[in-house]
Image (tube, rainbow, N blue to C red; front, side, top):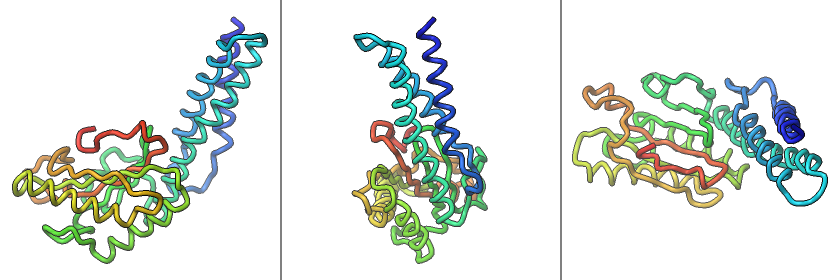
Length: 237
């Protein structure tokens, strides 16, 4: 029963700490869900570790562990939330909460929050000429704006992935998608070189059965992680 009380206290503490990070007026999405989730999980983990540590004053150690865990877990989530809003602002857009945004042809840049990362999707038609890996001037400007934000977060791990449609061979599209990812990564290498991946025509957003759908599939995606252990294969996940 005493331990259950410690867990409850830990969860309450986490929500209080998470609530401290809420700041109104941010781009579109000020829910800060990653902050709250990270704080809660960190608090519970800290409470468990503190309670199970040998010695006296288990409840006190559980409470202290909850505070430390909430601060660490919430802090990582807060950085992702904060970066998402700053990136969206720098790119002249908002943080999208629309699950269909990726298949909306009117959206050239889409910033979204995910449980373990922030994703920035750049449409190919505003990035590169057909068959080229050289950035258009307007696209270079946008990527450089993203790089300016990343300079403020040296702890962030960056991943870049390129995607094509299915015209041409898989090998040709593999080379092109990787070259495009590398072009973007070169501009984002402000705190270390990003991890790059060419995905060819894997993981399409829409069937490659029309010019409009193929245009949706040609894109570069940038991923921002707080923890390298959370990185996954962008061509599959």
